[in-house]
Image (cartoon, rainbow, N blue to C red; front, side, top):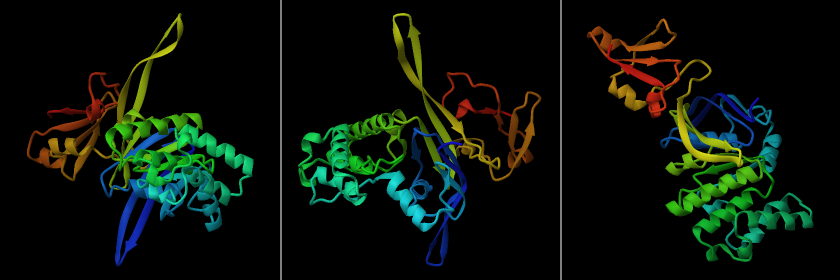
Length: 325
């Protein structure tokens, strides 16, 4: 089993007399030590998923397993312990992580004090964390003496103070400029590798794909697609493997009951409508034909093929093939 397993996850919020379906059967699997980005439009359910994953919200139905524990079935006390001991949070606003009247060092020490760390362990771990985020020489500075990027680095150190297995970031680069944002994503990657952290970042930052192992897109409360970053290496007799470059494979996700989300631009191009027929070809491909276009004569179709797409094809059309019949 993966470190995180979400299966048919549902979350319903009640607002006044209305029920809002934030997650509509979300499926996702995350391996231990993996670093992924969660992207999607506002209201897609990505922040709701992060809150459920962090134990801040309970799901309404489905399963969410973290390190072999079903968060839906945990008691209130066990869920409190999970949040306190296993999860680190980094928010968009550093003020949610930090106390302005404390120094950087004291902010990092505070969670350890609450957790009753031994004094020598607290001092050693605080120094290691502030060195890891590049701020040890600023340890006596208060927040007003630090830049926005430096404050967020302190916030990351605070999030790691409890030695979590899982690090969650909710728009951690949302208030930073592009250069500082790139530095922050590089820091998340460094810490992910240094401490074997499973890291999940919810973000609108397009640069996230260059920093994470995988980008998961959520639409309408369901997992829609995944983009996986791959590096190519060459091995020579003169030395170790060297990285030649990287490329991105984009996949449409099929959930546990066979649902998939055909990308909006492709649906629009072929006027997919709300009814289709499915058939198979002799070579095992699945053909999707819009009913309305069939009734009016010729119309485009989508073929989902099991053949490996040619490398020059990019994006969605690596996995969807459009034909004119």
